[in-house]
Amino acid sequence: MATKITDNVIEMKPLSPKDSKVRKQDFRVSERKFPMSNLVERNRIIHALDVKTKEKAVAMAGAVREYVDAIKISAPLAFKHELADLIGGIKKQANLPILACFKVADIPKMSGEIMEVAMDAGADGITVHGMFGRDTIKACIDVANPRGVGVFVVTEMSHPGALEFNQPVGEKIAKMARDLGASGIVAPATRPARVKRYREIIGNNMLIISPGIGPQGANLGDAIKAGANFEIIGRLIYNSPDPAEAARKISLQLKKRLEGIRVKV
Ligand code: C5P
Image 1 (cartoon, rainbow, N blue to C red):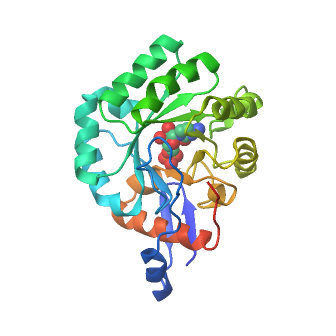
Image 2 (spheres, rainbow, N blue to C red):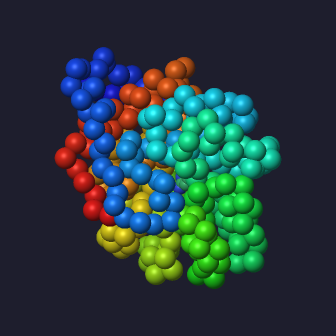
């Protein structure tokens, strides 16, 4: 099956009978125990649910839940709603782990407090910026790990501006995240060679989650081939006229692209 991904549009040829076989088998299930252990690699997709309202988010999560392994929520949606209500609503509908992509970036005290608020509301994992130093990351991990909540440290953003200040320190951030015991890192699918480098640095005991597929320019599957565990996909799914069908096809396509590839974690 050939897939052409352009801005917000997925063009796919009809599925062959072989595709349904691929759909039935789990690609890989990690045996590793880590905070956010409810994040399991079945589809290897985290859906970035960047829609505008809670009602849309809940409906979308329910529609795509079979084809993704977690739901990621971001600040714009979270700012509009009572957080526990938002996360609770999505979980009730989708029964999937929630990654609160708040990219925490403050002094240690305030970063820890942001973490507490997200955890109290039901987040299973939280993203934290790596650029602001060891004390901030440690404060986040210190409050999250005992509660079984995953801290995902952003090493390098996926957009072009990340080359300016962020990329030059990305490898140092990855080492720091590894040494402090983060659950994983966020690395750019838009630069698979960088994902490969980050995997070399952190080894096989941490997760890599990678955004940037489709509108940001990355090809589906390239980040996982380079060593990521999950690809984060937003607009390709929620902007589709039929998000459930888009998620189903993307999940199938990804499994086909990754047949035979295993990342040791
Ligand atoms: O729509 P799209 O698939 O590009 O969405 C990507 C998602 O991943 C957005 O929610 C964005 O905030 C997030 N993200 C990213 N690049 C990073 C970290 C997070 O695009 N480095």
